[in-house]
Image (cartoon, rainbow, N blue to C red; front, side, top):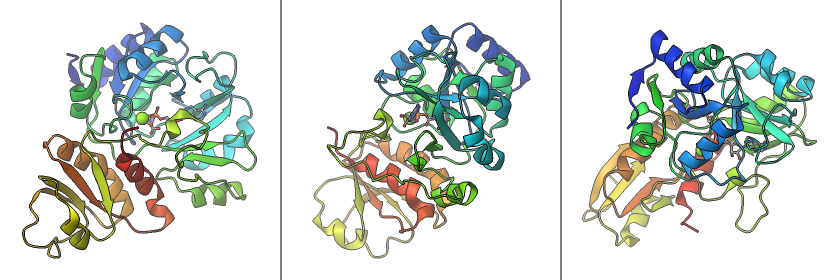
Length: 328
Ligand code: TXA
Ligand code: MG
């Protein structure tokens, strides 16, 4: 079992040495915890895929410590510059044509590379101290719920990583927005808490938005797989929990809901309820925590109250609908 180290200066220096030696370090970012390896070392990156049970066809995000590091990895820096000026460091990943220095395993053999500069001070210190860009998917087993705390990583991947850096709770709580700048118009591949309309305002041009990845569609990247970010427990979204609960025979039930459960009929036994904030950023920050807790509670079913319409909720709606997809 990997040790969890409080992310102070010594621990970060030790973790940077592990990265330089080709090892795996789980580290905090402002979105979710990442499972990091030296992005320029194909063997180290192969360990990430093995640890997660990740299909080789699903490319990784490369994390940089400075905007100036982007042009060492990718072409067409100018296309990304306005977005980087506005949103880096932060939860926005840009996809550009890759340079040969990026090993094929990182990009799943594809011609493009995804790059992000995270806003978490521990992530930035680790990347800078390691002196190499760090490839890092979310630090969870493939298809599972992303970790927002060091403890989540320890439970899920504790035996697979060399070290876990604890930098507290991930503030954003959902994975970064991924935008493909190699297409015209640019395309949102994964919605996040940097909104499509904010990106459009910076680019001064409309984006192609995700279609919700309907079943059977040939997907541009396997990360867009329909079932993703899912708890092991079955999860169902309900527009009107008070009424819809009447039809449920499963027991016990866990619930993720906005407010009072006064409307839930008598006789419906809800084992655990996670009361969620009405504001999207606060909801996002808490969602994966809630799903981790409920997934550990031996429930037959998790019921999630549907979230409002509107783009501020797009990333949350995306993760919930993927979590609700039944296993293929
Ligand atoms: O917030 C985040 O992005 C977190 C933290 C650790 O930075 N990372 C993360 O990584 O969520 P991961 O591997 O769980 O998700 C990466 C997503 C996947 O949907 C993957 O398919 C997509 O980015 N992706 C990576 N490289 C790509 C590329 N070259 N073209 C298209 N999509 C790419
Ligand atoms: Mg992931």
